[in-house]
Image (cartoon, rainbow, N blue to C red; front, side, top):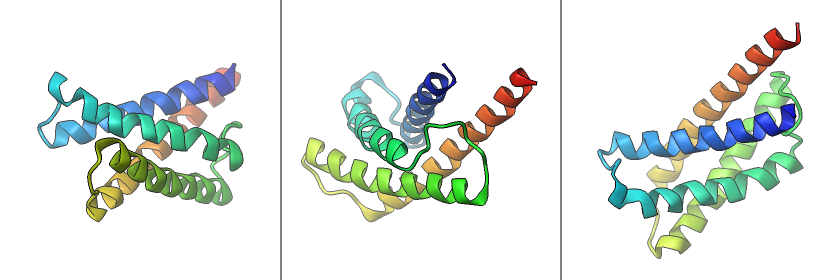
Length: 125
């Protein structure tokens, strides 16, 4: 059950990051929904296999090794997601988009996973 909560939290974190990205550009509208999906879905498609491969589905431990694996997975996730998004939209992707998406994703997913550790530690005590 805890693993399921972690996966759902990851999904929600990627969704919130996508919404925040569009909102920061003043593009949070129903007409932007296809472009939002073209960002969100590739992130999920890229994230879950990498998270499994790098053992990020187990309870987060927040050691240096864990944080390195987490952020490496995010960098690879965003790299693949940006390529999938470009193919979906049939457009080029500015490198700055990939960089900003990587940095905000690293902050957002790490923050979510930190909250998960804090709240699951309290509930298991």
